[in-house]
Image (cartoon, rainbow, N blue to C red):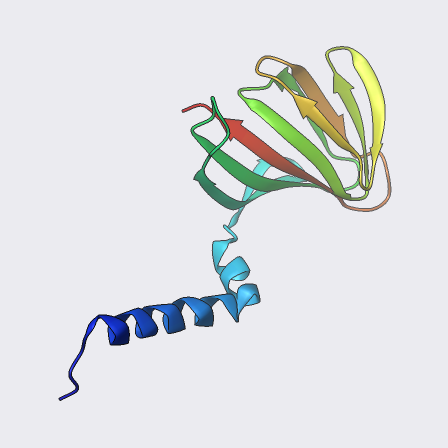
Length: 136
C-alpha cells in the first residue's frame, strides 16, 4: 500500500484539476442544457449559472435564445437586469417603444421592468446570447 502524505494528496489534486483544464470542450458541452421551447420557432438553451461577485447580484446565468426566421417574442417586462448580444443573424428589437436592428455582434442592456420584444425578420437563424444578472 502507498504511504499518502500531504504532498502526495496535493499533487493528485492538482493533477486532477489540470486534467479538467486540458479538456475544456468536454466541460463546455456538459454544461449545456436541453433546449426548451419558448414559443413557436423560439427555443432557449441554458449555458450555465454561477454565483456572482458583482455587488447587488446573487448569481449570473448565461443562455442562448434561438429564433428561427419569421419567429418573434412578444413584448413583455424584463424580470431582471441583463446584457444581450447577437451571436448570429439579426433581430428587430422593440425596447420601451424604441425600435432598432440588432445585427451580429451588437450588444445592449435591459433593466428590471424594461418592456422588450424581438422578431427575426431575416432568412437565417438568429441567436441572442443573454447574460442574466440575478438578485435572487
